[in-house]
Image 1 (cartoon, rainbow, N blue to C red):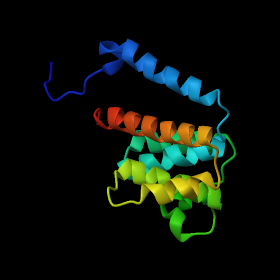
Image 2 (cartoon, one colour; image 1 turned 30 degrees about the vertical axis):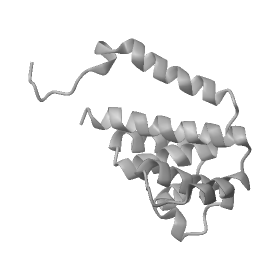
Image 3 (cartoon, helix red, strand yellow; image 1 turned 135 degrees about the vertical axis):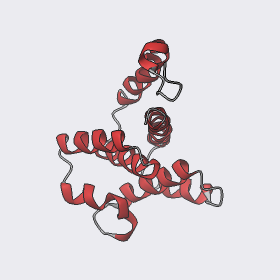
Length: 143
């Protein structure tokens, strides 16, 4: 075996991967806004530079009706007017949790989130961000 070759996780730890995938089924059962779901997953994947995930989440977003214009501008969401205040709050939260910005005022960000989301929705949003960051890291480790 080539010691530099990527680990084949689906062969080595299929039970772990299946367990991680099952989290998505549970989160999806809460009915979180699919548009936001896609935007958050794609934005975190852009930040993490996960090419596989960017391609996959862009396709999924388009398949669910997201426009090319908004997808093209997601990388500069804070510089354009294409996104609602609700989406902007979710994207801000995504960026802070993805970059682990220790200087961010989390209290202020939570207050902003509460203007647009229920406590349960904030929980699902945070779980979505956590899971995409996990999947980005798994996928990047294969490159």
